[in-house]
Amino acid sequence: MKETVVSGIRPTGNLHLGNYFGAVKSFLQMQNDYNCYFFIADWHSLTTRPKPENIVNSARTILAEYLACGLDPEKATIYVQSDVKEVLELYLFLNMNAYLGELERCTTFKEKARKQPDNVNAGLLTYPTLMAADILLHRAVKVPVGKDQEQNMEMARKFARRFNTMYGVEFFPEPQNFSLSEKAVKIPGLDGSGKMGKSEGNCIYLMDDEATIKKKVMKAVTDQGPQEMNSTRSEVIENLFTFLSIVSTPDTYQYFDEKWNDCSIRYGDLKKQLAADIAAFNAPIRERLAEYMANTELLDRIAREGAEKARESARKTIDEVRQIIGFRK
View 1 (spheres, rainbow, N blue to C red):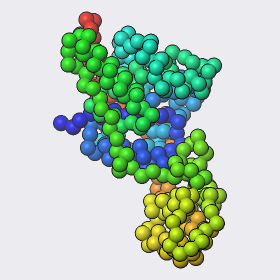
View 2 (view 1 turned 180 degrees about the vertical axis):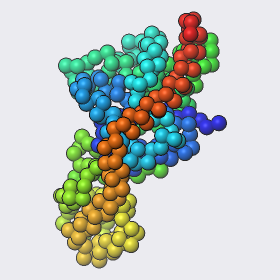
View 3 (view 1 turned 90 degrees about the horizontal axis):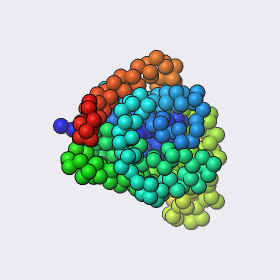
View 4 (view 1 turned 135 degrees about the vertical axis):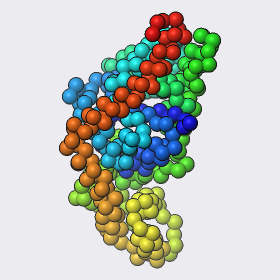
């Protein structure tokens, strides 16, 4: 029997190359090896007060993007968080045994409170319990997370232990951090920084067309070029070669590597080649994305069927939790 993995997807849309070679490729691998539940975390987004029209549109966009990248609803259960109401019941039960002090000490709460001082809501405070409910609802044993979520994962394990101890059961497994980071490729930013990210404004999005990609790549930061044969590349140039190693052929990489080593490299030529290769990489994903975005009926059906699968798992957990606590089914 396959181990169960649960992971949330932030409903922000507009995936970039960094997302693809990080979380998305990890999901594509996991869906073949594990019993996966991937959900679009639209309830989590309420802490930032999104506009009503953006909630549905954002969920559809991110669903379409992940499907275009290869996430398969026949292999993994893909659903929208708000379509599985059992999450809220488990969230309530966990909140009843979560303490104010431990929630206030969470780094994510402190950071969010600093960023939005006029909107320090209860949802921000109880983010760890909602995250734990998402995970424990399917009794997951593994959760793919980044460094920023490690403390919240420890909270999820604490809530699982607390429930088991309080009611004298061994019901909830303690979910473990699951990282494929050693296999993931770190995608650099075009501004010379070490990482591609939306907040840094240095992204190439999977939906970018050829003209947009070329415009962005041609503006990529460079230096004055090699000053002697076989010299070490600066970080900004190494970033461009990292891109080449990912989207270009080995022959292309070798060609520009040799040009660097003999000091004859022309950055304009490198950028033009890189832009063309990124556009070629993006093209099939962008085409599939356009097809999905034009078919909202299909997207809604996939989300609905995913929710039905997720609720089947969720109802089993909630029925047992009610009995353990002392409520009727």
